[in-house]
Amino acid sequence: MCRWHSRRPANNVYVSSRRAVTQSAPEQGGFPPHHLTHHHRPHRPHHHLRHHARPHHLRHQEAGLHAAQGTPCMCPLFSCQWEGHLEVVVPHLRQMHRVDILQGAEIVFLATDMHLPAPADWIIMHSCLGHHFLLVLRKQERHEGHPQFFATMMLIGTPTQADCFTYRLELNRNHRRLKWEATPRSVLECVDSVITDGDCLVLNTSLAQLFSDNGSLAIGIAITAAEVCSAEAEV
Amino acid sequence: MCRWHSRRPANNVYVSSRRAVTQSAPEQGGFPPHHLTHHHRPHRPHHHLRHHARPHHLRHQEAGLHAAQGTPCMCPLFSCQWEGHLEVVVPHLRQMHRVDILQGAEIVFLATDMHLPAPADWIIMHSCLGHHFLLVLRKQERHEGHPQFFATMMLIGTPTQADCFTYRLELNRNHRRLKWEATPRSVLECVDSVITDGDCLVLNTSLAQLFSDNGSLAIGIAITAAEVCSAEAEV
Image (cartoon, rainbow over all chains, first blue to last red):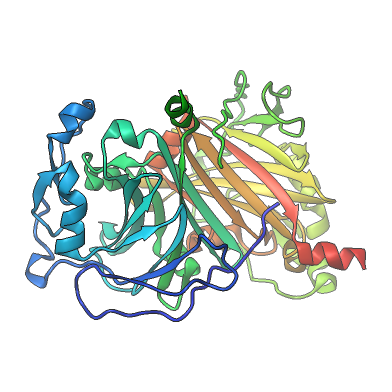
């Protein structure tokens, strides 16, 4: 039996920078202790880059851990040309894009200003179960004049490591609930291709509006370890 | 913690009629006792009707039970011009469209031949908690050349009665799970407008393929009574 419970966040925290910035807010009444609510403005490219052709991010990388760690990884933000090794992706996102890291197995992420025109990215790093994950929420027009929202979770790690987890994104408002569960992709794979393939949570504008409150979309995020990997770890 | 469990149905039952037909199949090994798997070919309009402009189905009807029961209701199938009172919708769907009625709070519905071109409807009636519900899965091109799938549950009853229930549609395959939960609409409201508004489960072609097995899409369906209405019924 499903219980409808409000995920309406507390006061919004608006940040005027055009860069991706997150702000922590106090814990919510009505949320379990592990729920945190975070407020976020979209990451938008600088104006002269807005219509810039995006670099062909990645080469799929199915090789093992050893090979992958030496493989250059491109920044998942579509306006950034940075490239570096896997182990320096987190410092890059923190220092260059000021992306905050949230802790806890279950969090609530609030994307504000959903009305802003496409293209736009909202991103947050999520640290749990010994790894860093990256949520990318992208507003994009795949059909002209019809922007859609695409949300996916990437592991800042190798594809083999990513297979050990399941992530869940949940929207819950107006007596409607939408849940998407999948295995995260590795940031060594291209976030662009995940979104182009539509292998993620996809929202059209009307659904996004139904789930939004005053232009903000609250996304519940949970990560769990896949049973098979938990069992292997115990051996 | 989510468990991935296969909902792969048993042997498909194909029915050659172009009309909406359902076939019951034996209960599945591995399913809880209440799960039934049903196989279904799309309901398609006769060829000369395929590109026919659809009648403007409904007038929103927010009046109470008494007024609504006397209100003419149009057949929710887009090729059918039938109109009749609410209480004869079920016999109409049974007799004219040979739509089967499935019993039980939780069922699995299998829509076959998902590759057939839009427009196409797959429908099933679902009897539980003292009411009849109608699942409509529609393949439609809202953007030319890009068919999408829209799934919604209608109560064959009034809007006030519909508010007493929650329905859940669940897709589960390939380590991905998508769940949609909402209050059913009344068949007195127009299924076309629900789909046009996008206030339903929406799948693009790539997601539909990810969740399909050999061209068939298994949709888990569950109905629950909303707590507030259960409490009222007990008073």
